[in-house]
Image 1 (cartoon, rainbow, N blue to C red):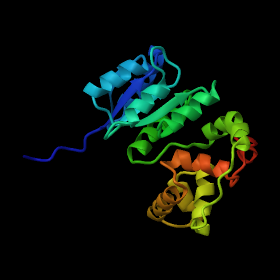
Image 2: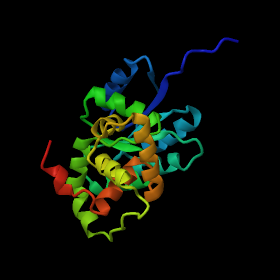
Image 3: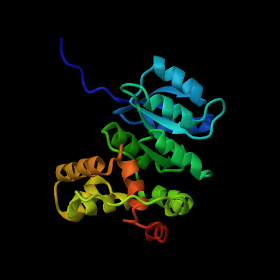
Length: 229
């Protein structure tokens, strides 16, 4: 039997606003390597439907009826072979965002993100990376900066090399792997190796947690990002 072409990335949309889902579906289904396989209007339906219709990436709203996106994310990421979850937010409630990340989300995006960034985010988390882009990081820090400042600060791991510290700082500033590679004049494969070691040494589950860790230890300050667009 002949091998089939690479299957498109399966995307699920979980949002209580039908217009939002319709807009995202239009953008996603316009791409040959992406396809929307499921829609749900609340977290409970999303979890149930995903048990029957597997997806690779879930775009998850935070505030929804019946079951919010935080609990839905927690249930999905607790499963074996769980889908990657990207939280969609307007940052109206900072605690929701932090809770969603703690629940296992692979990243967060603003709902008004440009189409090309939405598509790139889906492909990025499907590859195993997390979504951290500078604009959303700045907006997040406007809310959670004071929370991070008041928390007990962990120390920088002694076994982090100087280059790994530089990579962690670049990650916290919202740079992608390709941008970090360009900045340090190394290959993207080398950057991926550094990122993997940073995650391991800082005890971070993914890129999102590593970025928050960088702010917790004071490697990058909220005001370093809040002053630029």
